[in-house]
Amino acid sequence: MNYPIEFIQYLAEFHGSRDYFECHEILEEYWKKHLPLDRKSVWVGFIQLAVGMYHYRRNNESGAIRTLQKSKQILNKHTEEMNQLGMDSDGLLQLLTDSIHRLKNNEPYKSPFLPIEDPDLLAACQTICKEYGYSWNCSSNLTDPLLVNRHSTRDRTDVIQERFKQLQKRSKNK
Image 1 (cartoon, rainbow, N blue to C red):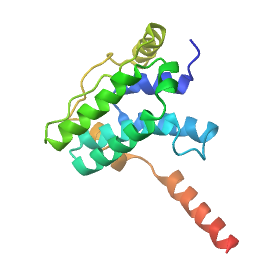
Image 2 (image 1 turned 90 degrees about the vertical axis):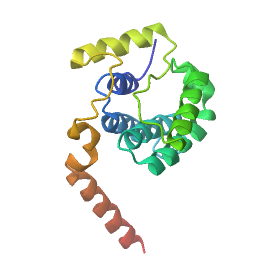
Image 3 (image 1 turned 180 degrees about the vertical axis):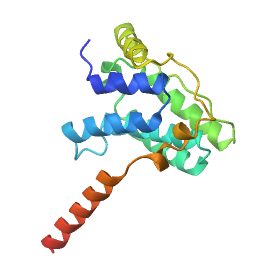
């Protein structure tokens, strides 16, 4: 088993804390270090999966559908890579299809289980989950505003500074 620790952490957060925003943060940082220009990488597909579930849980149906469809399009092109990452690619794509269908039929959010095929990966995720103090494959706490509305409670100083820096850079290049 040789999976990026960030992917294991992503899966532990996804199934333990159900903090999809944190899942997004973990894999985005990894993606930016390794494949920042590849917006169609498998990592972007997993990032969008977490973002889509975040929107679904918040009842943002249009945002969830749009993001989960993008995730499915990307991940559909990376089935072999998903399998190498210890996942059941067919099961994961079916989960996305089912989630989109549920959204379009106004069915309520329910916490998904990503189909982890490799028992060693599953054990590693469960171990990290336990170390973090989470129960494995628990349901989302829909009454926790810090979990459900995480985007509005975070410190965005670094994001704002980075955007300003990029804007200045573009202005100098004109």
